[in-house]
Length: 317
Image 1 (cartoon, rainbow, N blue to C red):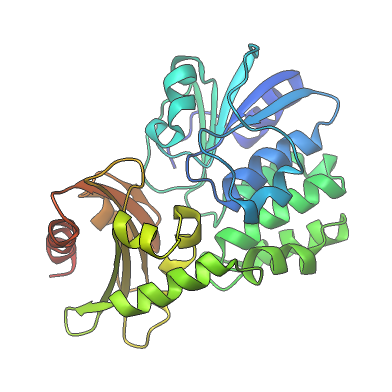
Image 2 (tube, one colour; image 1 turned 45 degrees about the vertical axis):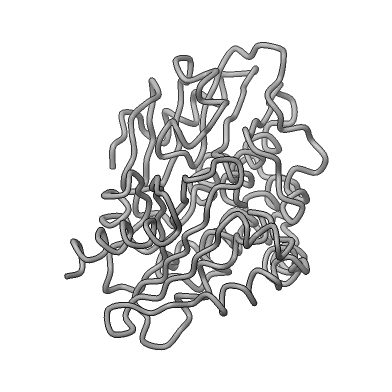
């Protein structure tokens, strides 16, 4: 754990600060948004704004509750990040505010200490669980909703190996504080847009196996996405499909970046036999042992797949 401040120290900073800008990571998920809005909603009397360099996916807008998340014109006295292991993951927000970030709260194994104060719990399943520990005495229904969404999302609705007994206890306490667990889980896991169904169909058509079926790979090019009416948001749940196949120990999704031809984003999910973060570290990324990401530049999707498999081979043989 690369921390230079205690949890009590973090709580002291947030209690003291009144004017705060909270930066989430690009390609936002429910954990980074739920954690940020968990803080904002726990301190309604403070001037807090959440910023994301990318647009919020429609399926996650219930977390923001209509609040703007674009980069503001006004200045804020204090700047922090949540769920951002590395500064570059914050995109344009990091380029604007990078040298002014005072606090980083994160739960990833790999990352950089780019803030003045860094609090990292790499054994915790979600950033939302850390934020709960900080604001548990300040919970209201909106904060509880935000943090429940964060935790449920990053634990796969409490199915992943990062779930502990404490995770369930925290979820129970959030429900007792007013979190609408049924509505939130339905929004996260059951409210799939038609574009996501189209993405699933294309993924199954593109599915390939490697290493005697231990590794499953799905790829998406920009032209395939355009031809099938699929945006990057629709690909958010594809990574879990590969991991659910019998005998597959490592599932990989490679997608060409919509706005950057030749740059391919890689998402990995694994069982307990494969360390995703070690593989993705070779690809300029990182994350958790069971869920990580990286990227490669390549002339084609085939070259991107080859570079990715070379990294996989180096780790798993």
